[in-house]
Length: 556
Image (cartoon, rainbow, N blue to C red; front, side, top):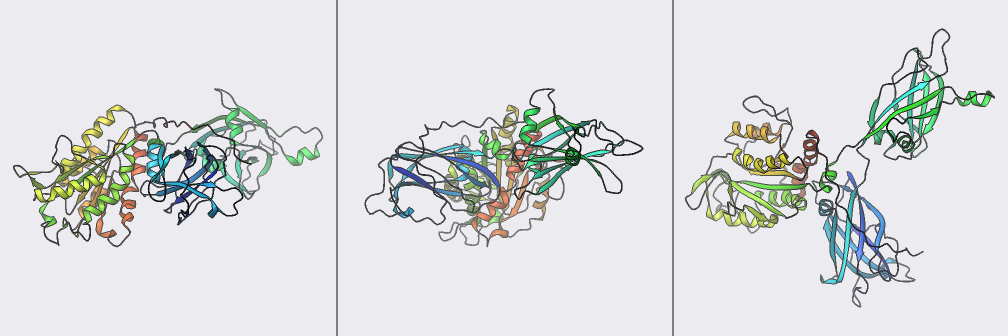
């Protein structure tokens, strides 16, 4: 578990504990906490301090303030495909207390990391242990991504009047760049090509990640060494200089501005009284290429539009039978319900209105009981949206007794239906809404040719498709749609622009934790989102600003 200090401050001395209830390991973001109006809302006499299963470090104590802003930053590894619950606990630090257990509990709140990331700023009421609100007290959490981790740098160097190390010709110079690690050892990050027989070389421009160059620390020392190449491997040292990426950026900030360093040979400098340098190295270009991340798009206002499509073909079995895949047992939710809850429960954090279109296919529906392959399971074709995932589940339960399971298993109509709003979104040229379609099906697709064509068309839209195979059918044909073995092609031979389909059989997860399915099927979505917008040259929207409260001075 990755935990960092958080902070708080009310009218007495206050502190906050963050409780992260789920382990995580990958993308970083930053979180800043604010808490308002907590004065006087302590626990009642005799109210015990809540027990935390995993406690973060305690924040600094801030005194005499009812609307504090917590300055410490908490870095948490973020995963789109996981539900990462967080708890925040606020305390009034007692004067002279010798242990944290003496502090007065003021309130707590819970949310998920996905909710904070998708909204950028979340304000929630503080609750007492009995579940009642702690007066008007609130806590606000503001998120931002740790910057620079995905950026690339393009550098162009040349040199002038380098020392000549060869007797019958000129030097063959090349340059090496090293970064200094935390253990003070130098690590090679780049070696230029050799420029033959030239004391004024111009090396080819090169591109490398900011992480490779300086571990995303613009103040990290960088060492540059220039050599005369020797085929024996015993290269002659010409000179060296040091800098930082920050210095390099500032020295080339204006158009046409270059930066230069004296190339120094310490041996010559110490021995020769009139020694000045062994030449000069010039940085002619230093540009940063911003590589946008999934969080850039989410925090820039991009919503995940989640749609559900459920297979109601007869091959699922009579729902009244305990053997049916649609059996509504009071003891155990069927696989359709389990997939809806785990996958939909994560996606709903990224949709602001929490309303999700839900469709069925392969059933005869009232009133005429004609077969439909894209009917609204709430039977409202004008408004097929359900309130949150719980609403989708409720509509599914109400729908089952009113329809007749039939067939065939045609998936193309629902893909084309979801592609329509995605097509409209594409025409805006903005990163505001990305569609994710979850298809739950029990068997082989009947309209495979049409489905392949629909997927190929959708691959050019802001859209991803997740297919979960329910039951024990042969899903070998479904794996062809996944595109893992090569680009999917439509019957006319046109290849998909990108891989947008993720297929998994539910049976592979029947003995795993409920979250395992969601982790598997959603893990590719962030890459697919970034890949689409990058291919269209669409940048994220500007992060939504937050307005912090006035920051008081911390107690000594």
